[in-house]
Image 1 (cartoon, rainbow, N blue to C red):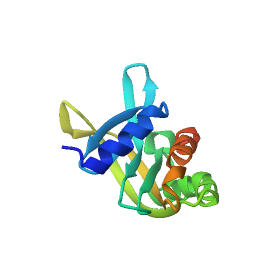
Image 2: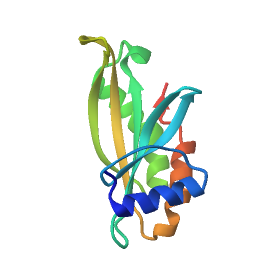
Image 3: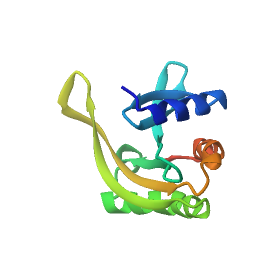
Image 4: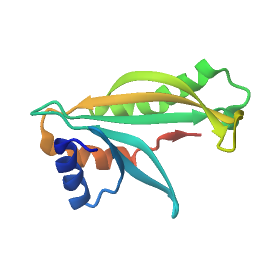
Length: 144
């Protein structure tokens, strides 16, 4: 069940023409259309009271695109591609992760491995939310 503040923020995003993928508790997953019938959600909004709303965006590289590189090199590649752009917009690195993408019919079969870096921004002004989400939607989040 979405939290009341999340419902209000979701309505504001949708009124601005930003598609919402889903809401889990107080976390809003912004929809990114990969294809007509395929969505991803690498942008998340965490509404908070007053000035504490945060936006997270995840940038990643797939191991299959860089089969000869060590995982640490892929994380560095993601940081080099997105870090300066995110920092210029006020985002800071929140963490990095290695995520195995498994076959939905056989979770023991790993299809690929994503190397992700998460950037987070706490909004100084809640009115900046729409602009920051639109900026994040325009950022290339899949390093190739």
